[in-house]
Image (cartoon, rainbow, N blue to C red; front, top):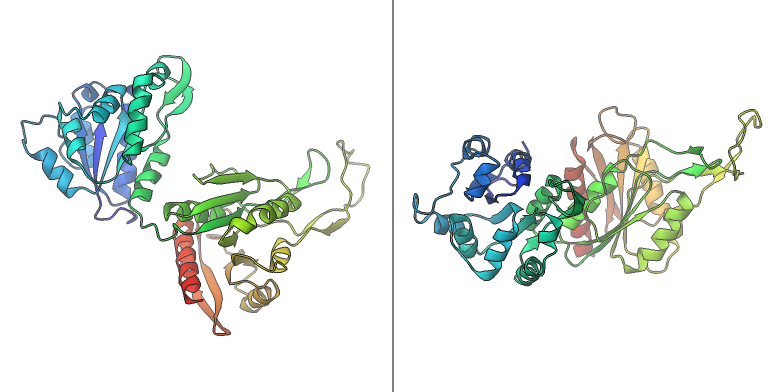
Length: 399
């Protein structure tokens, strides 16, 4: 169990949508993060999920009837940190916007004063109706956060906008709403993943980078309030929720994207693993395997070196993937690329680094012309990302 939501109390509203069966996954994620969950169901929700099953998995009694515990709506509103309704029907949204409080769920919503997250799920005709859209617009103006819905196949068999957004996105929105926004003044530009250098239209060279470190940095920076631009090479990961996602293929494309966006950034995190070399000759059509005996290579552009030549640049962090914790090589790269910090990691370890969900890194930076080194333990990449971002804030404030 992690402690992202330790000591946090979440009111979980459940309404009568067929998507209610997905609530079990959200409850598990919340519990694993340390949250205390207080389920409040409408009568219609019990047609889709049973109160007993929700009680067992959440660990708390399900509340449905106002008159069984007459002041429960006030006690929950006073003691809980966040209110999320998953899934939310058109009926719930319209009643909440109109101030109608005719059951325990709507009464508790009206009484609650903290952050509210609503995840709609309904037929597209209902979601796109003027009444529902007017209610959503009004609730948005009050600060209510809506997650989704998504476009896709609906329970009725039609395609449209009304499908419940992914549970992982709802979970991230809950965490983000309860996270201090200490990066709200920052625009963070992040590179992630590998690059590809093509020999012909279907063959290329690349490396083992998965993009997990860069994606974790983007997710945590966004969670902490930053504006985030993520430039990513090919990755099998689902991109995190960021302000701008820019997919690229080659090192040259990554360089061009960095240079295009760098002037608007206050922090640059070069977490990608762009290739250092590429074929000297590329072919427009697939080449016969017998037609070549060797593949001559040439150097790709050095993105960090290009950044170092700029007169004005953001706080710049490089990443050094070495065979062993070669601190001297990392310090040379720090000096050569005129970095503000470098993150060193050993790519030869089997249980960490490239393709792994965990890593152990060394942060190397300078204060008053002296090098300092800080070694982390083996942690998840989300935790490593948080440490990196906190150190950046500390160093920026010290300047």
